Length: 416
Image 1: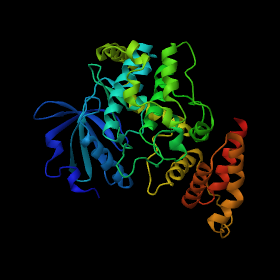
Image 2 (image 1 turned 90 degrees about the vertical axis):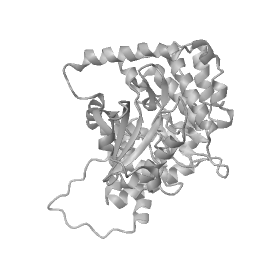
Image 3 (image 1 turned 135 degrees about the vertical axis):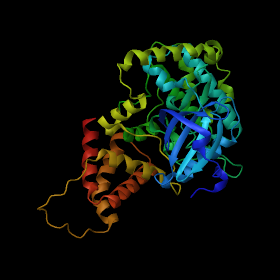
Image 4 (image 1 turned 30 degrees about the vertical axis):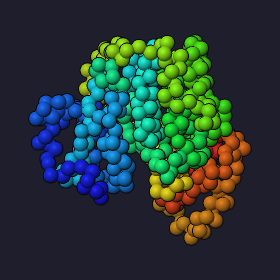
C-alpha cells in the first residue's frame, strides 16, 4: 500500500470537494470537474480505486511525487491528495479548454496555432529538464489548455527523474507512435527523448495524427529504430519542416535542447500570445454543440465506444514494469492479448497433452515468427529478446496462445 506521506487521510474529500461532470480518464482513474466547497475554486478531481489499481500503486505514487515537486506555470498545478477508504482523490488545477487532441476534432490547426502551442510545451519541457525530470509521454492528448488559452503539460504517470548517479534512463515507457528510437531499443536515454516526442507531436498537430498511425503499434516498434526519421510532408513552411527535422534526429546527441528550440525561427516568427488560442477553444465548443445531436454522453464515452469497436488499435501509454529489460515484454504481451480472440474450448476435445517446458515449446514455435519479423521489418537483438519474453508471458497466462498469435502476426506481416 502507498506510504501515508503521499496524501492526507485525516480529512474527508467528499466534504471538502463536490464532484460535477466527468471530464475524462487519466492513466489510472476517472477525472471529474469539481469545486472546492470552502473556496469555491473549480478544480479537477482524479479518483482512483486503489484496490483495482493495486499493481499500479508505484506509478500512482510517481505521478503524485512529480506533480508535488513541480512549480511552473507550464505544468498542471497539484493541490493535494486525500484517501477515503480505498478511493484516492487527487486534486489538480482545472483546465477547461480541453486537450490539444480535443481541439483538433473541430479541424486542423494553422501554423501559428501550432507554433504557439509548441512554444508553451517547450517552456514546460525547459522547466522539467532543468529540474532533471523527463515527461516521457509528450503527445497532443497530454497537452491541456485553460479557458484563457494557457497551455500546460499533464499526465505525469510515466514521468522520470534523472539523478546525479543515474544520468540516463533505460526503461521502456511512452506511447509507441511518439517514442524515441533509443527508448524502443532500451538504450540509455535522457531529456532528448522528450524532444523526439515533441517533433512527432508537431506532426500530429499539423496532420491530426502521428506518423505511422495506419500501422499496428507492434510493427511501429520495429520500424522507428530501423527507418529514417519521419518528415513533415505537405504544404507547410520551410521553417516548420526544419523545426520538425531538427527534433527528429535519430542521434539524440544532435537534437537541440528545449531552451535552444525556443530560439528556432519557426517559434520566433510564428508563435503568438496564448490568448490567440481562445479561437481554437471557441471553435471546438461550437463544434461540440453542432455535433451533440442531443447525445448526453461525453467525448470520452464516445471514444470508449470507438475503442470497443476496434480493439486491435488500442495501445495506450506503456508503463515501466519491475526490472529493466522486461518493459517491452510486458507491453508487447499485453498487445498480443488484445490481438488474440478468446479461445473457445471444445466440449468433445480430449484432455490436452502434458506440455513440455515453456522454453522448449517456444523455441519450436516462436523462433520462426521472430525470424520472419527480423527479415521483414528489421529488429535489433534487444527487441527480439523482448519479444521472446513477451511470448513467454503470454504463454504462461494463456497456455496454447502462442500458436494462435504467431499465425496471426505472420499473416498480418505477409499481407502488409
